[in-house]
Image (tube, rainbow, N blue to C red; front, side):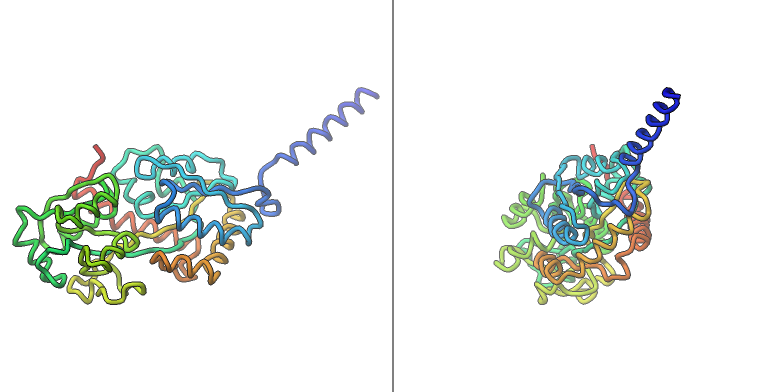
Length: 328
């Protein structure tokens, strides 16, 4: 009898312990801090967007949101960390066009940039700018394209590296305009911009947060915003539609993902927290100061991100592969 009682007690204790350490459910999630992996170093636009979002999500989730910077290999080291993480909602990936679209076409990755993640929400985007050295003899985009055609043997474009947004958009620009010029890769945007300012290269396709201070000081020229609408922070720069290159759009968009297999109810909670954060006037103001446009509410759903992500892969992968862009 005593042996039977001991076995019964042991069974009950085991069941209780298993219940305490079992899978996370929507009723208990989140019960501890959540980590968002930023796949680049601290201080840049990527990191800034993540920290603004994390601050906005902290209240709705009632838990701290920790930002962890895991830089390297154009963001693929940080993204792979999330791909391997437990699908429990406590390790998330903030990514963009480069990390979740371009890298899949130019790197041999240990994960699938589309299939190995559960979409949470689209966040914000910022259009690229077509900029040139101040000495270029052109006053608008049409004149600049003519200049490039007349100087195809010596014209050059600086980029922040092979496979970067500017590099890929540059190939698209050549295809759209019938121009030809040399690509000059640098180790980041800062040295590329310094050579543009110094007149050693002719052009860049760059983010507003990087270019606008130099445009305002007259160190470089801006010919067009690669979007349907002008920048609120620089309303004097025309759109590509207005400048004579209609439909030539390129934006750097940001989104949030969880590892594949994360329960749907947890994704729903995270999506609700993101939507609340993006509706917060303080978050909106902070994102606007770095020229980020928040996606409209109807595009902030997991399914909208899934569809948008796939459409970006379908658009850009053929361009990247046609240009034979590869990491050496």
